[in-house]
Image (cartoon, rainbow, N blue to C red; front, side, top):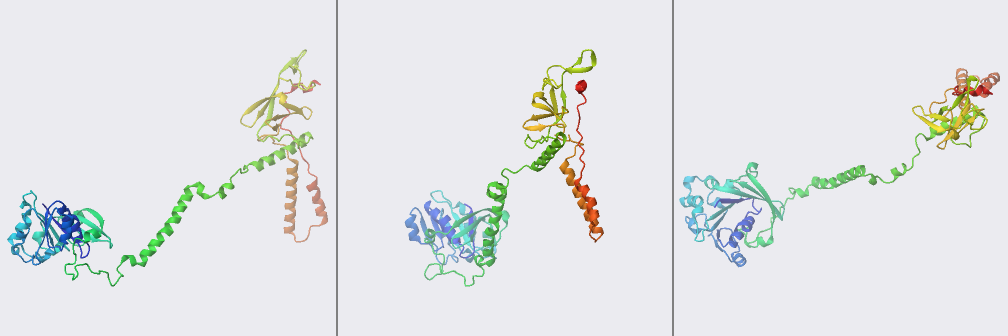
Length: 436
């Protein structure tokens, strides 16, 4: 069986770990335990009657028959063994019985075919002789974390010092101190009462839990982290942003509504200027379509091939456009053909006006249809703006007030505005207009 070592600073739980993980399991297996750790033998044997226990005498570290005190197949647990094999002890000064005990213990087998097991307990393996340290296969280093918790670092071979090489570490385990294990042994071997005394420190400044910086960090973490988490959640979750921002987006007016309405009002004024008929109560003027032309049916007049006449009866009965004719609409990039019965002639049969999709279509509606037709109201406003600008220039150039004669001379320019209305086309393809 290999030799294991339990190390740790005083009060960290070396004896506790040995009792919990070595002595109690050995008693459950019916093994014979030999140790110098002060145990509550009667209590252990009452709870675990399968095994047996022998306590080493107080002078165990000076006796020559130590090997004879541990029979074959027993579990030998030696605490504070620096007393018998201190560091610096030469191999030539070691008893031959001790060398044989450590080197050949696995050959000491009892009648139940169980070989001897040795466990060494000390504060640090650097405290013991090198010959014993070289035979250790595994080291359990106990570190006390709190009053109720500890950590065990498990290393291969003999691990020495407070920071053994990490290359030797095999794994870590954690545990808590249990009162039901404490009651089986007396850790303080020199205690007058047999119990562990008060080990509290007089100077608590070394306690990490009394550091103001640590408590400030504990308070700062939630104060800084929680708003950040809430902000990230609010950024990625639209529902968390509230309904105020959304209320501004419910049924928003289209961005082009005002320009379209202004364009239609201007078109209505142009129609009124061209035809002399008010269209305030008619359908709104189309901002997309305009009349581009028409498709008719005509035949030559008998006896005069240079003149033509419609194929059938006209729409109005007195005009010259057939009922089978169609009107061509355009939006600048595409064409649309509608029946003539959806349209009517205006301005003494000079222009065609159609009502399509609830909108009024004329030669001057649509995109880019009106090129030479001037909006009367817009022209007046532009002229008034120009006159106002001229007056401002006169006042800034001369501090004296403008004379009445100048004002009178400027008045006709603001009121008497000449508006020239020119239609887009007169449908030159209507040769029968001269048939009257």
